[in-house]
Length: 88
Image (cartoon, rainbow, N blue to C red; front, side):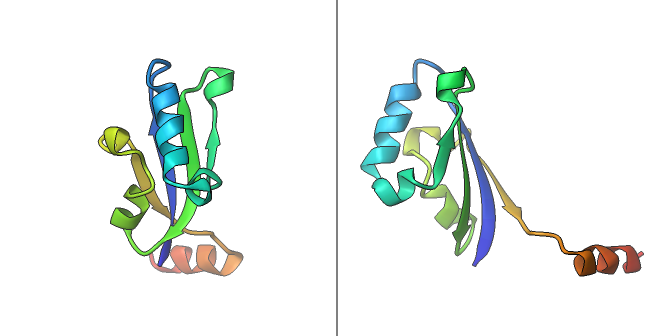
């Protein structure tokens, strides 16, 4: 399991389809997303925990998967930052 940041850009014309398909995936999926659409940024954003990138991608509407950006992320601690410095 790991944490992933998902960004799903879509056009103004694709917006309602994107919202409808996200809702059709279930309220649990919809609740993971924040949307910039009403502010003119037609992008859906989510931070999720998933088994792998493929599992994370399954939360993106099919017609937008090729455009979705899915990035594995991790929280940094003071100890992990020190460990990165020591790897030099």
